[in-house]
Length: 118
Length: 111
Image (cartoon, rainbow over all chains, first blue to last red; front, side, top):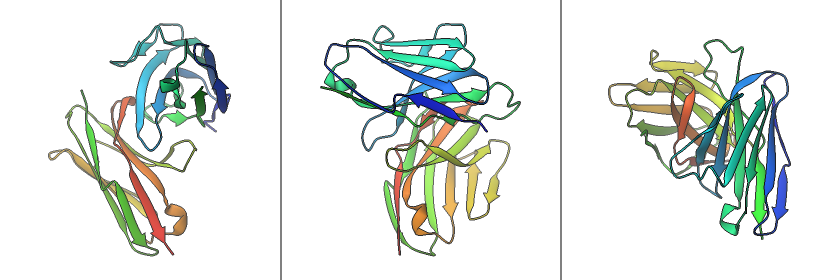
């Protein structure tokens, strides 16, 4: 149980274009989903927290107009990187908390999406 | 905001030996401390976690200790095996939100 998927697993796009990444909770409902970015050989950095049906909360330094997050349902959140540039190339990972997890604080991570901007 | 430091950045041990990774955090409000194992290009996998009302937790070869007063927590892996080789991340969080990760420790278990 508690499986999170991401699509696509990798994507290459040209500079200036937009890319959408999907994060789905497959066997549970997620009221809260999180988006992280991980540069090579670095740690995970939280970009934003999204709650179903409301606007995402972005971490300091993350441009909300560049990284559009939509959490339209209890099982799907999307991250759109708009006007992508080479410096946006990174590993993007989502995670989700199980709505029915009670007092568990665990976040379930997706497999990540490797974005390369040329 | 929260800041998490992690040491060492790299660690090599002989198979069968123990490995210890230490993390410190800055925000005394943090109350949840998970440890993740990440293999190259893969998702982080939770290996053990501890809450602030507990001082120690063990799961087979893996244990975590927490010192709230000093604001540090440690991961202990005993009887290491080659498959334990990976990058390990600690994190500090407040009620499962706002995970702040440490910079990671690359563990190599030499056969």
